[in-house]
Image 1 (spheres, each protein chain N blue to C red):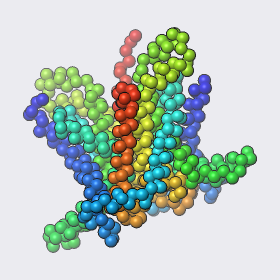
Image 2: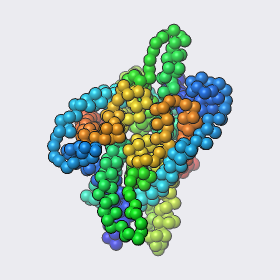
Image 3: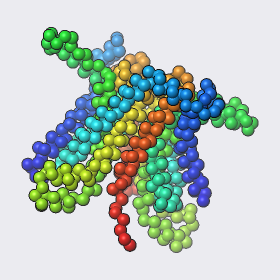
Image 4: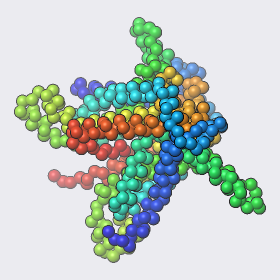
Length: 278
Length: 285
């Protein structure tokens, strides 16, 4: 009984702050800290705020492309790694381990200075090599592409870990049976392997999307002059707490909550053994 | 292994391998190289080999000190709060609602830490808890922009990460051991001390390590709840790279952070391994 009360208190501790943001996002009052009745006007304000909407578009685009690249390349790598042994495998695993364990802030810094330095060398070279009839040479700079590249690096490592766990738990006899029945490797992949790993791939996609959509610290360093939604929120908080931020926060929470619950359903759906009669 | 398929497998791994090389390994090497370099007048890098940046690290001593005090403290506080909850989930909670309760622990961890931390600006700010305390007669309490606010933010942000590995280790062990201990006349306290706690040490070790590692690189919680008064190495790094543009010195600070992290974690792992068998691999998703 005592333990149950303790658990309830902890769950309140975890969810009350989220509830407060949602509640205040519907606050009619000007001041953030007093409740003056229900209103959706702050949502209207956000939706008609071009800066917030730009940031939202950037965040959604970056998150979608990141999730797509990470789940495709991550799944490919997880499948290929099955056949890797020895030193290459150890090196690859070490890189994945580092990608996941190194603080995001260090990844952000490293990407920033490495890319800016590389662009410093590449831009003059590009300008020199660019054919004149094509007009001015493009200038490489930090922005959406560098942000997608950095997010994909981290989330790809995540997808590899998730999909690999699924492959390890896969029923191998089915693949052998398929080969024995003269299916081509491609046919076996499409009809046997893919359906088994698909929930993990989809979960990886959703988690990658959520990570990219919510990430602040890597984007803060790598996004250049682009503003993502978390960067927008962070700089707004610096200027003062307003109900508008609560509305954005509620929308962000709604997006990530629904994706996360979908990912959990995907990951758990086939984790459990089929119920047996007993 | 079938050699004819090995080139296909290599092709499958290639994009990921290249990506990790270009976006992770090379950038980290750049940080390492820059940390020995000299600052260019405009803030860039001049090739050099000197330890000056490292010798200057004491200039940011406060940031290192705050991080090295608040990260272990936050980890320990999260452990104290997480353990009973993990115990409840693994041993006391009914199986029917267990999955739901677990998902409810994991979900906050994956939602925006920025928004969740932002909520505490309200709660700890002048019109939040201090005002409530004012009503019941405790006046003049200030929470926001103090180390306490940062500590609360840390516990709140990282609690899920601590609960999960402990839950996994508690859930896995044979519950008959508890019955056996009870049948043999041990008090609940003694059963806990001699059976449950030792068996959950791998989970505790994993949880503490994960939380500690992430805390070492924390920026948002001190930035939002510490109000510039309680700052971590992460805050110093943001200042060095985005405001004062001192890349070479900043690289040394980042390298020092990673080195301190690696050394602490490996000492810690050695101690834990000696204390109790194997570490667990825990899935956080």
